[in-house]
Image 1: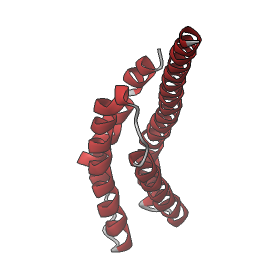
Image 2: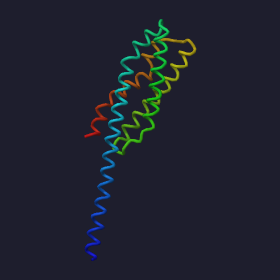
Image 3: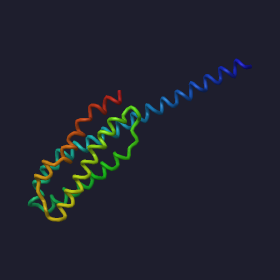
Image 4: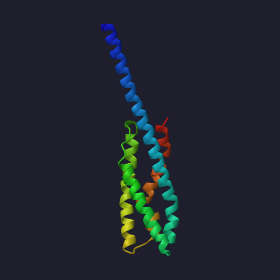
Length: 148
């Protein structure tokens, strides 16, 4: 009887340990998917916004579209910052959050300048926030490595 109880206990511990391992893998895969999607959104933003900003100087509709894209990017950044990264990705996630925080400051400043009528495309292209977003796009390979 003791032997059956011992075997049952060991089997239960192994099963529960396996469930925890499976949960960690699922969390990692989910994070990799969400982070990859986010980096794709940042990449799209980085490639579209400079041209849109140039158009926005003389086109009111383009300016409104630019404001919308900046606001959407701000929301995406804030949502990504709230993600819980698996332990395996903590360092990478922190790096992205640091870039995100710099980008948030720049987006807020740029939106404020647009509202005040101080619209200058050079501020966007040469800004630290735009550079931070470009650096986020470089993390896609590191994120994909987490999924292996």
